[in-house]
Amino acid sequence: MDLEKFQDDVYTVTNQLGKHLAPDDIPKLNFVRQRLIELYQQNLVKINHSVLELICAANLVAKGFAVDVEKPLTGSLVCDLYAKKDNKTAIIEIETGFTPPEHALDTIDYYVSRIISKIARYSKYCDEFSLATPVIGMLPINKLFLSPTSQRPHSEIKKIKSLCDMFYKNPPIEFDDILNAKLDSIYLINIDKGFAKQMDPKSYYSLTAAILEKSEIDL
Image (cartoon, rainbow, N blue to C red; front, top):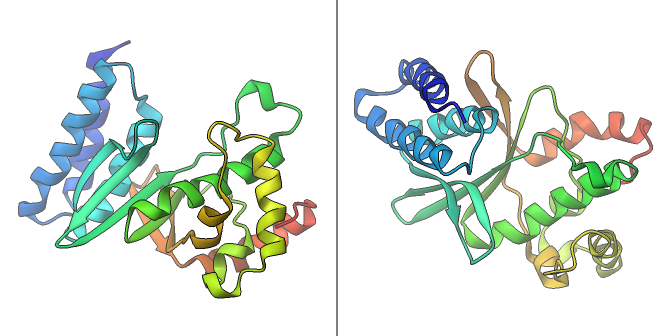
């Protein structure tokens, strides 16, 4: 663990991001930086993920939110970014496409179910839930989450729950969590240039669905 290198990197990123913030907002971003340093000292975060969190945090701070990172929601559920503004709460979960070695032979099914599980598990703890990914990645968003709860076929919910049950058993993803889950936006993160662009899920799905369909990924 190279604490000095980590500190140098997060200071560099924070200083660059701070150039685009109002002076009164910079302490909010510095708070996130200090939290990440403390978490790194506990071996709970890595630099690549921390940079993504800082970029997304700067986006939220610019909108008037106060942001925390790696915030526990339950005894076992921790979100990447948790933000508050007045009486509104927002959560952003960052996805990079990483899958563990034990899923080397079912990587796509695992990742599709992982995205479903994130939406189902986290969105009930906030007013606005978003997924974020580097621009070089692609999120397999299930089209079910583009529809209002009242228009989600139970047969389709059972189908994607069955997929999730292959990978998530303790605890499982509940039917009602999928039924009531919401996805409010997608953040595309340009790491090199230090910014994140927010998109609505339907527009993101329209851009990616054809490519995923060509790859025979059923969404």
